[in-house]
Image 1 (cartoon, rainbow, N blue to C red):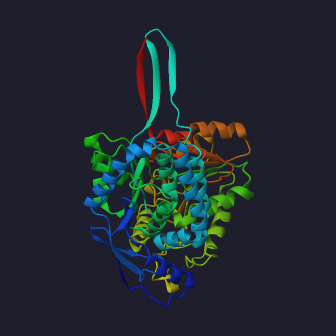
Image 2 (cartoon, rainbow, N blue to C red):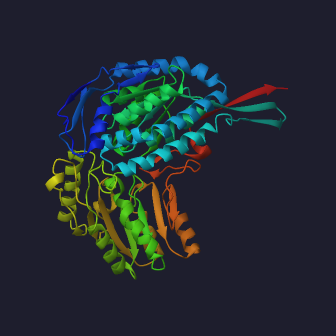
Image 3 (spheres, helix red, strand yellow):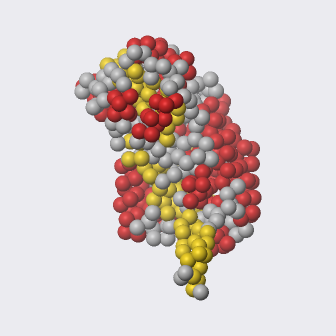
Length: 498
């Protein structure tokens, strides 16, 4: 790997340490060994200071085919391996994630510009998903049907063989744990496509797969761009694809997978509504509805970026939210005190600026805060102000479409029916949030939400015991729980005559 424009006298010692660590990372991990990519050169830019760059070669199509070949060769032995051994390897991986958690967190922040405090919070999430699916290795079960006159039937649960794991850039180190661990526990080998925009955390995690002792070919990790992604999705040796990203890229994955009719699991974007009724506990609801939409600078699919407020408390909520958002200040992503950091890139910053400009031109709502690129000491980074629109038109693009940036849109409603109609007034259906003291109402609305999940009066994050996944253009399939395990198993019916 070659490095360009990397300052040696960084203002933040943690950033300097992360840059030194980056130089030790070794590219692609496949076939039980490390290799340099043979694809195009890619220059990674640190979002907090876009003068900090690093150039490396991503995986090319042949690299991807080689990784799939190693996985294909290993799948038979891995499927027949002792479930206790698979569990031991996953438990060892979880232990290593805890031991090397700070390293993973720093690489995540270097990858994306996420505040280091938020990156550190991903480590226990990763650990919990790995340990949870480690416990499922010996619980892959079939069934028998014996009370039929024709004979006896058995239904076996079998792995697909080789699973393609395709990750987006915002939280790849945690997203991979939501996917690959269930696939491995159920007896599949995995080829993991790391995003070229955020490669270093996944390189560091690949080292932990190696240290844990997974057999050759069972796990491969490659940073790849569109060429590598298309080769992965199109290969007939892939039994199933699990993809996290945007709907536009998902359509391309479907196109590549279509000739082989390869089954897919899609976890895509969101435009989640947070509904606040007039009987809600505003002391809890307002801080949640204020700060959560701006987590990771708005770059997460489950964030409640639409706030729907009952007309009786609308003015009060808007006033309190406005005051809280106005108090948000940007900071150095490697400063543990920072809560609001940069976007992933200058291109993302410019895209958000374009969304704001169009919303104003279309009179989608009244902008009361933000709307500008942040300059001054943060001018070299991809920083954009926390932006707040009120009185947002439910028919507008601002209301209906995902921005994936620090924009919160507030609208008012008069009754339950209007709240439901507004919440469901988008093609996205990943998550929904609801604040009310009336539990009968809460359940009525939860039932009416066209979304894969509904959180009532709080949110605890994505826990491994429960299925997570969306409706509409937020995708299909589930991660988490036994449903998440079953995504990587297929049923085979066996008939035995009398």
